[in-house]
Every structure is written in structure tokens, then in C-alpha cells.
Picture 1: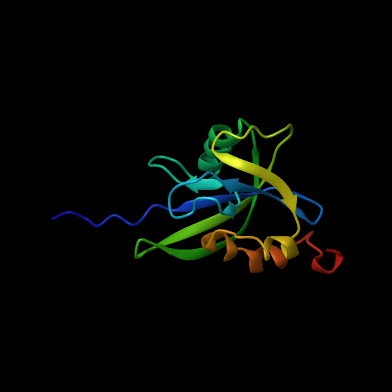
Picture 2: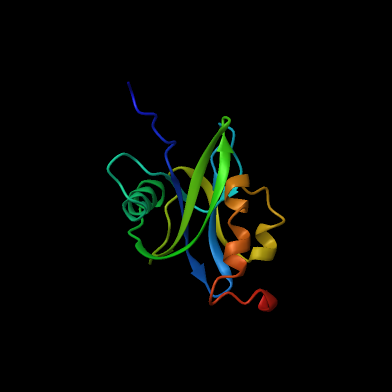
Amino acid sequence: MRAERSPPASVAGIARKGNLFFIARRGAGGALGGKWEFPGGKVEDGEDARAALIREFNEEFGLAVTVGSFLGSAVFAHRGVERPLYAHEVRFQGEPALREHTAWKWASLAEIETLDFAGSDRLLLPALSASPGIDAAAE
């Protein structure tokens, strides 16, 4: 008898400068093609959330990140399967290289709400609004 595997978790790296958040637009193709997102991805076998974020930011932007505190989580459906999404604060220095995305920018929560943003990442916005250091009124 085989044990059922739980769906892989996803992680989102939340980098911020004051009330601005680092977001990137995905390349064309796939269900999320062209959408803005908080960078991250799936946690691979043998990884924890921190290791996955370090790997993803290196692969996607050529950046070395420091992973900070846990900021919140959400559950989203992908192909009919519910998956957990965990958000952690990340810090980096330098200019991101666009390896898998077509654009990046620093955006306020108010601007993010107006963008064609990935639905799974949009679920994180309430947690970010309530996050220490985020002054939604100053946006």
C-alpha cells in the first residue's frame, strides 16, 4: 500500500523597500504567463522553504538572497489540487537579471492590487498589509 503524497508547497520571497515590494512579470506561456508575482516557486524534495527561496532567486534573477522571517501563508488551487504557499521576507543587493521574467519593479500594495497579479500571490496581500513595518496609510 502506497502512502499518498501531499502536493508540493510553494514559496514566495517578499523583498521590500519601505512600502514598496519587489515584483516581477512572468514570461509568456503557461497559465500564469504575463502575470506579475512575488518571485519564488515550488519547494523541491529535500528542501525547506528557505533553501527553495535561495535557489529560486539565484535561478530566476542571479541574486543571492538572505531569507528572513515568515510573513504569512495561503492555500490555492492548482489543477484542482489545493497547495500551500508560504511567504518569507528576503533581502538582496544588486540589480536583478531577467532570466525567466520580462520585467521587475518596486510597487506599493495599492499598485499591486491594480495589476494582473497571480491569484495565488494575491492571497498574500492581507498578510502583507498587516505586516510590521508596512504602513498602508503611507502608500
